Length: 266
Image (tube, rainbow, N blue to C red; front, top):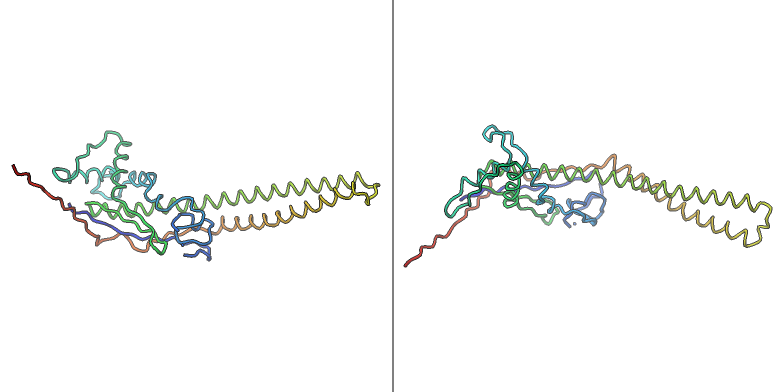
């Protein structure tokens, strides 16, 4: 049986000018500085795991290609039918098509993951390969995977920017509240020691300590404000752009499965 193998390379571009080309995780342009296109020090979600995850395959399996000859069937159903076209002795094992849609998706996911391969090359670019005996399905499914990976990647980027901004705002407000508490304590100290001898340590030391504490808090506040503004900029300006460098188009590589038939002699 002949299988056709598509190959696509996918690169991520960020609006940040300091996104450099180094590991293999999706968080590369989610805040890390020293990174490849799909990598970062944060390393929270690996792009390979995303590409080969069940979630991604389930979404692809649910898609219905907009071609009349496929009769509005989803990829899961089409893959099962294609698999069964090559079933028989020394071929594929026949798969009974499940009666329910969830069962069809589960089988389709299994077939998708069998045909998919993903890796990060030395330049930090994602390489996707998909193989199947139907060259039309190979092309359509390859593009479907790229679309789903891109959607998740962009969504994750925006979600992280939003979370970073909300965290920065809360931290800034929290530090400001601490400064206001210190100011109230200083005011109260002035009011209660107005006629006191400031030369006495019991009156002077608390004021000195509070002023020193306020200076430390002020430094934290200025830094927090800077972080908040930076987070706000990223939330408004930075959006990743996913570009396909090599499209999964024909001519495809061909894989021939040669089966060895052993004749048993008496």
